[in-house]
Length: 283
Image 1 (tube, rainbow, N blue to C red):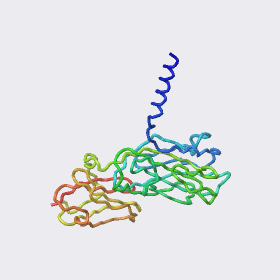
Image 2: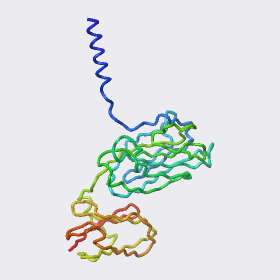
Image 3: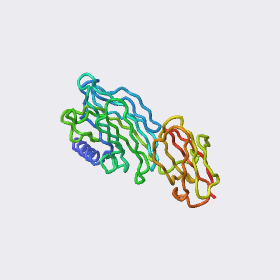
Image 4: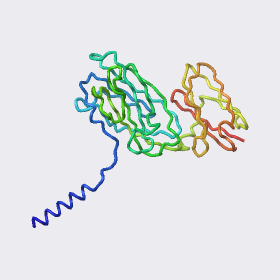
């Protein structure tokens, strides 16, 4: 009986050992905080995410946080991210931070592939750092991970941030790492693009060869444009650019916007991340 029990145990152990653990993104175990005064992240704003937190949330265990929060990003779309980060005002008051944002675009549980470092800001003084990035057309649709860090820079002897702190910083990972989930989509729902707004005027409408956009800015603003077809596929975009205050007029050629067929289209204008949508007709 003991022999049979032993055989069953060995078979069970061998079967359990042969089962491959599910793949996951690395958890940084070398980021051990030396105090609650060390640099950390107090706010991340990206699309629908707006998370405020303590700079070091898991003291004294580690400086890695899986927030569990998520947002949806569209392939080909440009987004602005802002990261508010702190300093060690007691021990290292003049040390700037390095900011990094990585997105696993191909879902291989690694942030090391070309193009997956989407933000790299060096020597940032404590406060809020802002940057923009465009989700590439080659990104794989579906659920994946974005990793964000603010870490003491090499001006204080630290190594450049890496997604998994590999090799570990010889002086210790003096900063914080936060993970968020993102869902990448290849198109938008047409139901999300039908609300008419009065923030701008399109003319002529219907259009034949050209389209003019008239709008007014109360203050200098970041302005971007997207054009969608009737099924919600983005066919043209203009990256964010700063426009001065006052009356604005932008002239566009339909041929330059990849509009070659008559029909209904949707014009999306983004002013400082606030969106307005209008339909227009091409004859």
